[in-house]
Length: 330
Image (cartoon, rainbow, N blue to C red):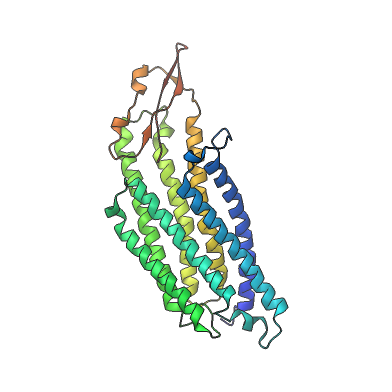
């Protein structure tokens, strides 16, 4: 678009991505701490590592970092090294140049990987039910097919064009429609499952005050999922809008999207671990109820969300200290 030239779009995109990359790195190292160390900062044994999450975390870091590095290289090539006709805009429009291809691979692969992990979490929460995630997987496979076609067309086009051109536009739009739909569907399934379990377990949960009734542990998990999903879906929707309007701002928004996918993945792990650590701290409350009221077992969990009994201190009016309580985790 003439009102936002490709040269300006590339500079703005590099700046925005660099800012979000800095945010991403902070969440990345915090996420590594959770995955590699326990609450006492002792390194976990190799057998205790969550290898799927650790592998995805490292892959996302590779894509996020490579996208920033390649973006910087592309700007140096266009504004400093290129001396041919047309100036920097000509260099940026070489759609089949390896730099443009790598940038596209970073965006679609990071997004595809993030979607796969969302489906994986949904599959785990529904007790590994393939029936529940079947449609989400179909949407993901459709997005993966679009990914392969986008990369193939861009690599073989060999003409001066942008990512919003008629040759690539329909494929890119299809990819984002499938991604947004799959994200909304899968996040909704996860939230519904947690809400349903929390509602069914509510009569069996002992609360020490009125505020805990409003903020149960499962609802905290549900809030984490919703907030992270909202962040991811918002940036994907913005990328779709800039693409459908043929705006060069799609370069900047898609650059940010690469980082946001990694940020949301890391935040879910970080916040879930923080919540779990807080629950493991002994709590002291005043209560005159007998201790047997505080006893809960996993049998009250109807939907299959993992429930673990932990020790918490309860100080009674007579000065005696008892133990009881429960926490849920998934």
